[in-house]
Structure formats: structure tokens, C-alpha cells
Length: 176
Image (tube, rainbow, N blue to C red; front, side):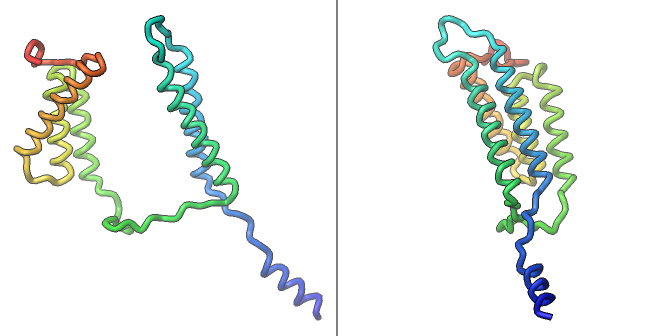
């Protein structure tokens, strides 16, 4: 009789095998693939003589970082660490997604993609900002348009003057 109770206690107190989240492993694999492709793509870039840093550094850093994160995520997943759902302050996790808002944001993004060559970044960036604000429920359209245009023009000059990368001026060619 004591053998049966000892066996039952052993089964009850035996530690459970760690749970493994296959979605985390899939995410780790996807991160590793993206990181390796980024590093490979960076190795194919041409390097000029005048640039001491070269265009490869940033993709190497990003790709290497992705691979490191993928390895760390795979290790903690195989050890049994499972993330817990966040009980955010303003987020009701029992509610479903707001697909109307998502559809509005996708529509604004598609309009931006379709018109950026024709209208230019300064105009399209303003539309993107104001449209995103509208999709997320803003009631101040005029202010959103003004802020969007200021940000878009500032980013246009930031890219053109600061980085030497010309964004398309579109209908404002010669004005900007």
C-alpha cells in the first residue's frame, strides 16, 4: 500500500515539462531569415572609396541585431518561457479589432502610395498625417492638415539638405 501512495506522490510532484510556444519559435525563425537576408543583401552593396563608413554598416547592424534577437528568442522559448498577456491601462483585451479604423488607415496609406509621385512628398505627407489623424478619430481637421504639411515639408528638407536624398517634389517642383 505504501508503494502505491509513494508512486502517486511522485507523479503529483513531478515537474511539468516546459511549455513551448510554437508561435514564438516561428517568430524567431522569421527574424533569423530576415536578419540573414539583410546581412547577405548588405554584402552585395558596392562601396565607394570616399566614404569611410560605407553603405553596408547600417544593414549589417540591423541584420546582425535581428539574428541575435532571433537566437535569444529561440533560447528562451525552448527553455519554456511563455509571454503573458499585458493588462494595459487603456486596452480592453476582450474587445476585437476595430476593422473600420484599420480599413481607413489602409486606405490613407494606399492613397499616399498612389499619389506620392504625382503630388510629391510635401503634399502627400500632409495628406498622410491628416488622414491618419482622421482615421484615428481626430476632430481638428484644419490643425491636422497644418501640422501634417509642416512635418512633411520639414522632413522633405531634412532628407534633401541633411542627408542629400532628394524626395520627389511633385507639383511643388521649383518651389521647394
